[in-house]
Length: 563
Image 1 (cartoon, rainbow, N blue to C red):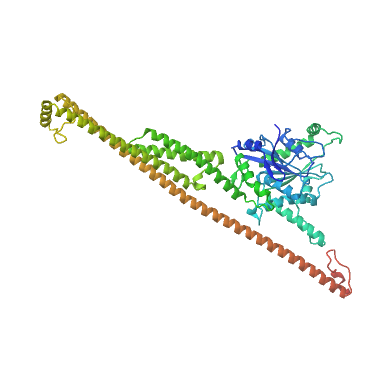
Image 2 (cartoon, rainbow, N blue to C red):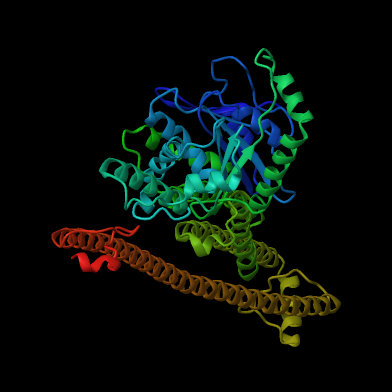
């Protein structure tokens, strides 16, 4: 199993068809894990150690191994419940910052776990690490949905520091603890405030943040073969224990599937999303809205499934026409069953391909139902035409037979008189005294009466059956209309609930932002008041003769007599 290129970033963004086909076959929920960091720092090597098999290409050469984004074509078993696919990104720093941000953006949006891999032989440098993380914030600004507050845009952040002598707690404090800018000069204060702003944005954009340190491997600089490096790592118990700890911790975060724009992540969803943002990322000022993009993608896919289902429905209705004519009530039942089966087929296909539990609740299917109803109405009209044609043909045949019989009787006056007398005696004169059947004896007349009685009973039974089927079809149609009405009501209620929830979230976010600004203004006011107090105290103190100061800069009141 070897990684394959997925996305390359040159003048244009190119998506590899092989990787797309591989992902489209993954219909069950999935996760993605991506690794980022400067070039030639061993990202692919670390990813292979986490995967517990050599998947991504590694090299000791000065040139970078990865270009764009590579993907492992088979899932890595972090969790038994969810398949996880690994993404290896090209190293940062070889191209412009804009290029690095565009490479990182799709990986950040789709990954549930994001690894930033750095080498810190002399310990972590907060400026270097935070400037690297700053590129993530530029990617967050691409997402137009949350311009004011980047709340949980991305997955779980893991900063892995290789060859680092410091403890993980020390490294975390260096990177993420807010700096006090009160006693700094203007230039240092500005740099510290920028770092604090990055820290705050990172804390909001990622679900969680964690710092790990990996011990240094004793690898001779003359050893160029990556296979030897892997063997040395496997023999280093301390290194492998830490890799195992990191893997176990990430496994807990990969137990549940990631979501993208409110939809559970699957292979087709992932490929459709990347294809949809391709042109946006190629622009000079990308603006992404994952929910809007996913809504458009789902609507397009559902429209495709609707067309497929309507083609199937058209074939089924056409096949049913071969059995026409059918008794009117019975035909209504058959056509209603075909319509219901097609609606169920669409729901199953949407649930299978897109993991949408109730398509009629979340999406407008009025056009689909209208076309399906049109197919049913057309088939019903054709059945009525066939029934009318059949009845007309029967009447025509009866009239022809009647004319033939009357003609035969007219040519035989004796036979006609005998039959007429029998009919008069039996009280069964029909059609103004003209006989329409060629029976010659009393036994024949008795059998005829019995046959006619049987036919009347059969017609009565068929009429009752027809009425029953018509009533069943009417009830089924009424039930379906009632279900559609209830679904529309529920959809409107759900839309109102979502709008209310979004309004409350927006109000809460604005309130939090206002509180944050008030706290910041109060803090600045306290700093200014303290500074003016210190200045006034120093001026007053010096005007009365001076004296020793305390450690905090205020006058020592024990020497008040010198004032």
